[in-house]
Image (cartoon, rainbow, N blue to C red; front, side, top):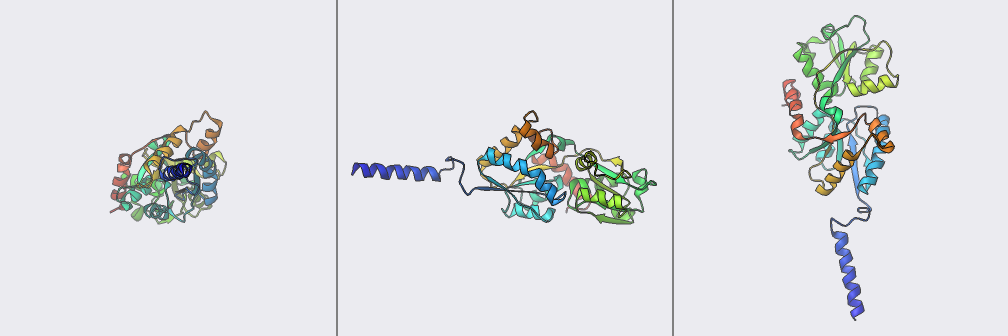
Length: 289
């Protein structure tokens, strides 16, 4: 009888331990961290960039990590707000939209060190366009309408230079992604365009930019990309995710590959206040009410 009681007690203790949030053999076998990113580049490129980071997070978090492709920027915001995503790579403007859509619960966790002073590049293949003023009356290409570095901030800085995109360009085109903007300009589909500096530098490094395409101006710096978590995610898991990103070290060969694909030297903590300027710029440009 005593033997049976001990067995029942042990079974009860084990069930309690399994139910406890602190029990972790490899987290729950069916636990999955659902991750996505704004589609600011081709889907195949996004998958390539995320693959080693996903494996690293699986190891650090002891749980499965699944990358969820999305069709457009708005889909990432909606998926985060409807608890279909746990972690998302957002641009500054997309974060502002997510913050509004989630009633302030979305939490920016980390950013690349480079994102504290991000810039956009204005480009052209037209020999007659030598400065921003020369783009007036021309066909101009932005990236996605919801892109911080491919639309919002360039549009805002154009306004500061006295160029109203809706009034002063012959036509405005939206390519949908930064690499697509370069293709628009190279092919003559647009006379000029703008994309983020990181993608521009990557394409130049990879020799994927036509020699006739060149930079005519660079925006002032601004805060941009970050990794954002949904606000009701387990606080303990949020801390683990943050720690995993902050632990990435360029001196570690495995980490170096991840950082290189993310175009980062390292990740640093970020906060909502960093994106107040983005929200103000969006309102000034008429993109946010």
